Image 1 (cartoon, rainbow, N blue to C red):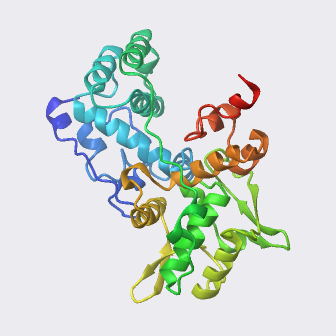
Image 2: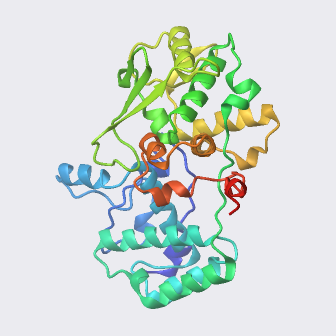
Length: 343
């Protein structure tokens, strides 16, 4: 691989739903691809095998879109730094050491996942499995710590503007999205993937079928039940009001709103971030500390404070393990109920 080609490897911006964006990057690598061939247009790392439409289709389905974007960004950063494909364990270790001063240990571990995947699909030995790489990462963790920046949990029931009624179409959509995102403990991708056909109404509330999620990549699907709320902002009523105002009868539940009040395409996950940040700004909350994930974190935090069992919370959130769920429990009184029992 030539250094000149390596120096020309561009850092491409993330542009969802764009033909030239990293959303469309194909993670299949040819063993002979150099950096110039890998990043000529930002669309594919290499052209799919001629005539092998089926292979190309299922290779694309191997990872979720968000995973592909993340892995592509990981490899792009490594190549831009000066790495090569295939890489040696020594070069990966030097890369980690060089980036340790400005990237968190968690981000570096994710970078290794991207590098590992690129080598796997190219058929190269995995340099990240070398003990040298693992020891360097362990040293970084011991030196810099492992604390991760987490989204500030939000409870929209306590936010004046998040649940207040609005005659504006955008206001009704945002209110429904925020309340449903909280009560359903949805990930951003899950929230925007919902279709009207996924909704089922009953006297007890709203049932939503998730066909696919981060922990259900093979589309086994799961049901999320959101009950009617009487004495507090109600997600079910908010969704009803949004559907009535938007006159959406099928397809995407949450859509962009084009001026003047015309519905556009399905929202993307980044749109959820923007909506939550806009509400946080109106509420006087630290915008840089909130994201779409704040709704999911807020539900877990509120449920734990209310004494809900972790098993029931896990059923709502769809977490694969209680260990992962426990990471979401934050902003809770550190003494908890210990004073009551003298512990």
